[in-house]
Length: 256
Image 1 (cartoon, rainbow, N blue to C red):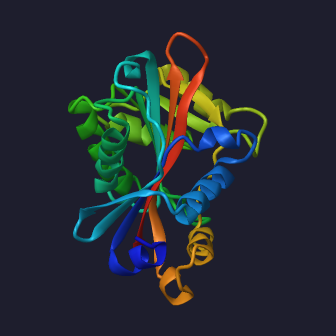
Image 2: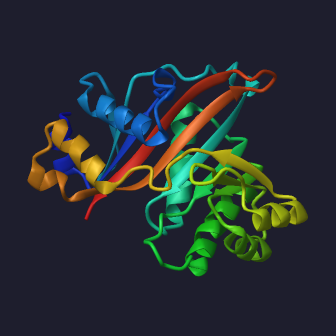
């Protein structure tokens, strides 16, 4: 089905972009994602299927890790939420499992939606999202869950409330040369690992996604109605060596 038709007839579109990150190792996460989106939208040989009457999956053709070799790899899934909707957590994990043939992953990291400058961290909304995270842990989807870019106050508030505690917190060091001392002290006290990362806080802005749609032939009047609702990145690594396996993105979008 043509891309323009997909974005005209369906109310949700999921893009599953398999093993695309290894082709551009020196680009930022955002640029790798945009290149992956452009590639799948322009590829005429994608595998496509309707998930439900209102949802369409567009999947590029790639070879996942074989069933016999899956146990040799560890898998990390990082979820970048664009909305405070708990159901998106399960939606991402279900899609990853179905498309990669997995029944669990080793780590799940949650990046809460980017906040406007000056807006306070909405702890109640974060708690609702974290309840969904706790559910997938209890169901055996992953043994370790973490957060990204929470400061000391935010992390402490979530940690002290949560039943399933975050075991790690990713910190972007792009704007500073070292981790905040108060965060380091609290993480040590609570036994939370701190990992540095270089992902943008807003990994996919609406305007960039709309431009990808227009470049792929979706009419402007239709393209401007669509926006991303979540993005996820998955990375696999050989357990006994520092050798990376398949790495890629998936995302979902809906019209306003």
